Length: 240
Length: 293
Ligand SMILES: Nc1ncnc2c1ncn2[C@@H]1O[C@H](COP(=O)(O)OP(=O)(O)O)[C@@H](O)[C@H]1O
Ligand SMILES: [Mg+2]
Image (cartoon, rainbow over all chains, first blue to last red; front, side, top):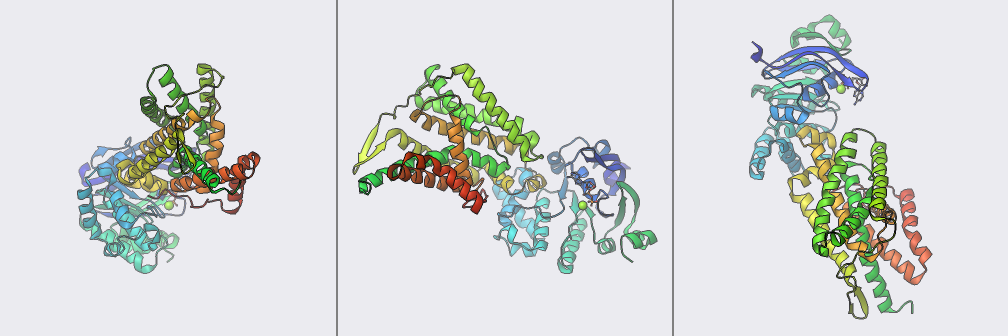
């Protein structure tokens, strides 16, 4: 039964120093799905993604990925196992070209340079606007292009589970659509996506599962269309 | 006399070779700041340790200068990796104060350990090139100074190639730009930190090997070097290794001309004056804080 979920989180707590942010989170993510986590500022959404990726420690509870416990694995080991995270805000190498950023994206796989170049060409096929900016420094790209680049960098690591922290933050409606379309295309290829989003309505209209996180606890997990119709959610998060 | 072209050329030759020595001595400090964003207050003691290890390898083990230098660089690399592992790795996510205090402590321990082992009486390490000199058009070139220049060239071109083409060098440049993005793509930042410490210590020790035969060896000989290194790093742009090379030469030339045409007091004040002026007028240094290859 457990194998139908690519990720299972059971009773996890975690936080920073003496500030416990997550108070026993339970969540099971089906393989190939697109989940959107919504919640107020400071609810612990980013903390939850960091905990799944192994960037902060899980203080109690378990994280199970593809049927294997990864609770004690480091961020690097989890990336190698197939969990990739694109953090909130800009996260690339601004003085290196798009091409060099993509090569570094595959760093964890220890590929030979020729293989790496071939793979980065394949990954960038999904991102036509990046191909046009191939030799431009990442720092000179637009916000939307940088977000695409960061997703492409993490895809170079070949994750089965892609965690995206507010990928549409600060983007105009056009680039935001492009990000969502890319995410849909990825799930169509079998990659599971868990994303945190402030543009809750736009994300919930497209994704499969909606999760509401409140004060470090999961308060609702439903199919996304049901979450959209939920009266409390409409009032608190969707401004409807 | 002051405008005699041969004399001016001699001052240029002296300043240039001294300046390349400053750059060589400072590059380790620039590397640790540029890549790890940390200030190594044990930098002067790494230089001192390199000189004393050379002394030990030559006097105690009876090795010739060249072989002793290679052994010393290897030992220094190991020590630098250890220093990075113990002091910098646990503090990567903390403010810079932790590393400042940690390296300061290591520096004090090193000074006293060396004083315990070798005593406080100034020692001398001999290099086969020390007494060599040759003349071009009336300008005297000293053998050991030329070795400093050659070592600078070898060290900086080696460093360039390492940063540009090696796997770990690419990771070091990446870490200089964005540590969070390193974690995102799976670069092991602890490993890169240890490598940076090793490289910085080996280069600093190498500076000690080629420069120390020109001076005495004593436990706090690093103090003067560390002041010049900070000046070079601040003038060139914190963490900018090519900026450090240019700033080193500029400082060496300025000191040489100030000493030759003015007086020694002016010469010794230049590093401070330029450093303070730089911090006031252009705190990012001449070339800004980047490790760009
Ligand atoms: N690096 C950090 N160190 C200490 N506290 C943090 C850190 N990041 C976030 N926090 C705290 O953890 C809580 C949850 O933050 P976060 O997970 O970023 O919220 P969200 O992404 O839902 O807005 C907040 O109270 C925040 O102040
Ligand atoms: Mg957040």
